[in-house]
Image (cartoon, rainbow, N blue to C red; front, top):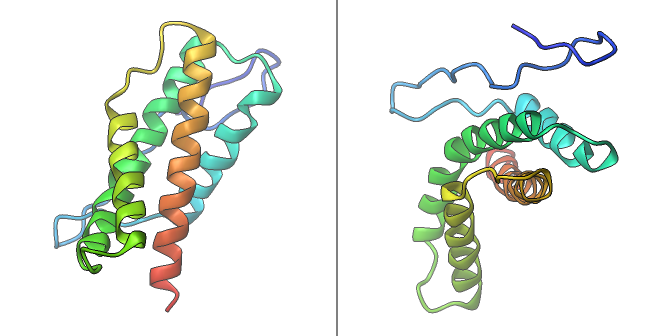
Length: 135
């Protein structure tokens, strides 16, 4: 089901379809859908979105991050424990986990910041995923 804007143009659904689980219990990464969601989220700064729209975007991004995060955590666990790069990656992943636990925000400004942060986190995770799968 899609939603319409004030001028009647169809938009993407607020919530992504449920991802298809693989036999391993993980979910298939739909690079195109996640990329489109990131692009839409990063464009929210160019207008005046409603709080409900931003909250929906937060939930959509959370869903994508939840799919990408376990793979990034697993690959980081395989890095040498005493390297600076390992520390940087673990710190970034810890920050992403904290962002996932945050509420969308009680006002438009806070929700907008959450969307932007989650979009950047999702973008980073997706770049890591595509780099690993293109090898």
